[in-house]
Picture 1: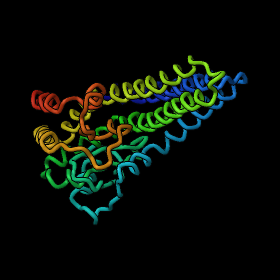
Picture 2: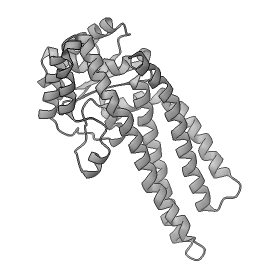
Picture 3: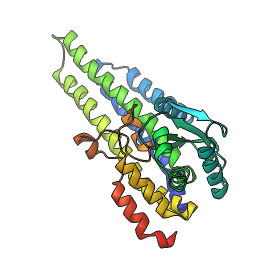
Picture 4: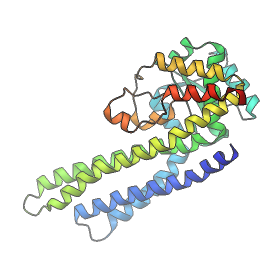
Length: 294
């Protein structure tokens, strides 16, 4: 587990560097498409990317909560959820994170923030409605495991960076299309092709990174959560219910799909290619097969 925490801290910097390079590559494509020889567009994009990464490190958690429609609660607002989170924080030796509720009938939960001192956990109203206390404790222990293992730093940062890659790719596509329409006489077909390729490949690469970093972290958070509660069967039952009552969230955001405990998207062909979560039956099987160790 300590190795996982250290790896997550290292991965934060690797992911930040990787996304900066990806965004710089998109800036280089934009420079080629515009015919700029001064390098202003490339360096402007690169500097902008560095500034954006720094901002996202501190702001992505709040951005994710806002996009999910989460509202912060105090103990008096929902004593059951708040006390479970509070008790888990005491058990794990972590600061009590801010607690949020998302008004959505789809059962789900997520954690976000840059470190345990700036963490938040959120649960949907649908989750609170269908889980008994032991199951809810298992779910929130899973989310607190993401906090303890520093998964939240990596996944929250990736959320913010995936958003900007999508925006830049869309901008390049529009530049390629409308720029080519405006300059019929001098337009270079290669630039149009570059713009289209950038539009397609950049989001796919970002989605691949997003999916890869999430899958193994879900298994680790399940195991850490079970170790915390000493009741792996509670988390296993919760996962079973998440599978049975699964439905897409009202606010579907592909960029933050990897943050949720269960995949919040309506599955389709492309979604299955870039699944951010391991199959629920596999997660249940691992928990039950290893329950003697917890």
